Each structure stands twice: as structure tokens, then as C-alpha cells.
Length: 243
Image (tube, rainbow, N blue to C red; front, side, top):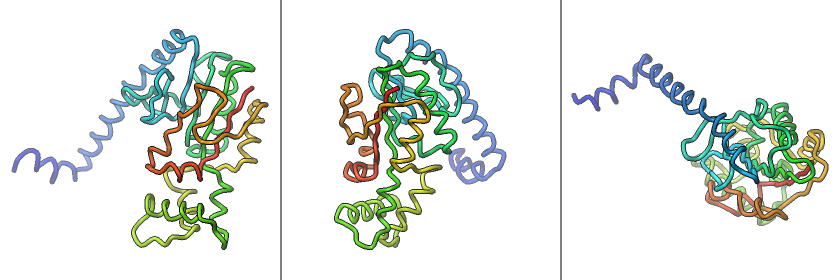
């Protein structure tokens, strides 16, 4: 038996092997993540216009400080939004968060919004947030659906659910609440209230890809990630907010 076969058939079934593999991955993450504070500080120091993306994943935007929970080499630096942001008050011009806030509990979401308000420049700094619209999703439970709703249900089931799942809004809504690690889904009323509580005063709803601010136009990536821009336009609500 070759070592490759031994590794595949024997080692990978071993609890010790799996434990060691997990430990090694954690160690690699640790050493990648520990460099992030210096990288973040260097970005702040070297840029006059500072643009921060939260939960970037692999959607690294050129000229932005792209961050995620763990460092993604060449794409994002580690920054945990549940903790104080490692940057001074009144230091950031733009913050962008796309389909992140629904992945954290509401109390952590409130902390994140307050930190965004703290680090944005007073009066000029802009926060752009995109997240699923709970009102749109709950509308899929109605008896009389329009063409757009029917398209979304079919597309969602085909893309996200299992074979033989019926094209039913109830399937979509249930999965939206628990899929992908979702923790808390917002409607417009509650997201706007959370933004106001964090200190934002000027709040405007926007369309995907559209903004009064050039730096915030055309930066959404979720539609490309799911390979269906029409789905993204239906499910996403986007707000821009200024202190």
C-alpha cells in the first residue's frame, strides 16, 4: 500500500490524525491572524481616504482594508467584529458590510454598529450595510405570489436546497433562518432602529450597486457569489448611514 493510500484509508479515520490536523490548522490561523493588527495599522497610516470592509471573505476590494474573522491570504486581514475595532475614533471614511450582520447575534450586531459609528469620521463617514430583508422573505408565505416571488423560490430551492424539495416559500423561509450560520434576520424597521441606537442619524435605503458616493457604487459581490444577481436584488436590503 502506498503512503497516499495509507493516509486516505487509515490515517484519516484516526482520531489522533484528525486531532493533529485540527491543531495544525488552528496554529496556521494563529500565526496568520497575529500579523493583522500591524497590517491594519499600516493601512490606516498610509491612506488618506480609508475604506474598511467587514466580513470581506474572498471579495477583496482594491484600495480597501478588507477584513474577516480570520486572515485570508491576499484577500483579508483578521478582525473580529465582536471586539473593539483596532483603529482610532473618527478615522475611517467608508465602511462596507455585505451579508455579515445576519451571521451574528443581535447584541453583537449592536456592538458592531456602535464600533462602526465610533471609527467613522463625524459628519462625512458613510456606513453601507447589506443583509437579507426579512419582510421580503416572509412575503413568500402568502397564498398569492407574484412572478418575482415565484422566481426567487424556484431559484433558491434549486441553488440551496436538496433534491425533491418542493418549491414552497416555507422551505425557503426555514432555511433562511438557520442556513449558512445565520443568527438574526432583520426587517427594515429593526435595522433602522439599530442604526439609530448606534448613533447614526442620516439613514437612506439604496439599491444594489447604487450610491450617492462613488466609493460605494458597484461593490456588492453577493450576486456573483450565488451566481444570480436577480436573487440578490430580491432578497437584499441595503442602507447607507452617516453619523
